[in-house]
Image (cartoon, rainbow, N blue to C red):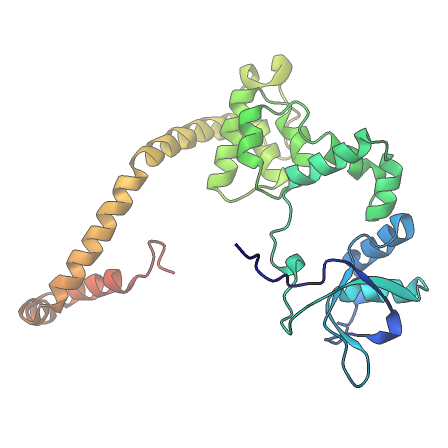
Length: 294
């Protein structure tokens, strides 16, 4: 069985930078952006890791059109490089693996940084390469310390702040799972929301069973009310989870039935004459593409 043709020549080719032609204009303010500064710091610390992606050489000028790596090319020019390793595309499409992948999650980043530290790369060197404070590296390396496996599984594909781990580890495993469920339901993975959930957590569900620091501007009565409402919300969430699939199925069937109903000319004429408000509501339901009306 023959293998499909590769999109790039397997071995990188070292090309002079003056033979690489950018395919788009440099956006204003790029040189002062955080991402560009990170790339500059990384190249100064460890050099170019990912080759540039270019098209085949033009037969007249000998130049290669840059397909992927515009910020890396600018960084190389600013750092005084004369050439760079490049992957040469075998076709004319601007396809690169780099713009077809999903960015790594926070937990994947944690594993990569931890593995680098275990292999002897110092946090200081990692911080310099990523252009961040070394304390940020320590937080990401220790991200999952004290987090139960069930909570880790729920967070594995998500992006969240490194400080979230320090909030969750103050709770016992069952409470960690509850809080993550609430955060996912609310689509709010911020540290501020996690701290609010921590403040509303009963002492028996905290590590050491000591009450967390009170939130500013929140009285004891308000905190007690928050705890009661949080408990009620968790109970309601469990009930919704049990019936959600059945409810969705019933709504889809009802929508289909209403569509056929108002397609009937006699029914449509009767409703338009006798119950125009009901007909308008039926039409709104039928025209709804999704359950949230979007």
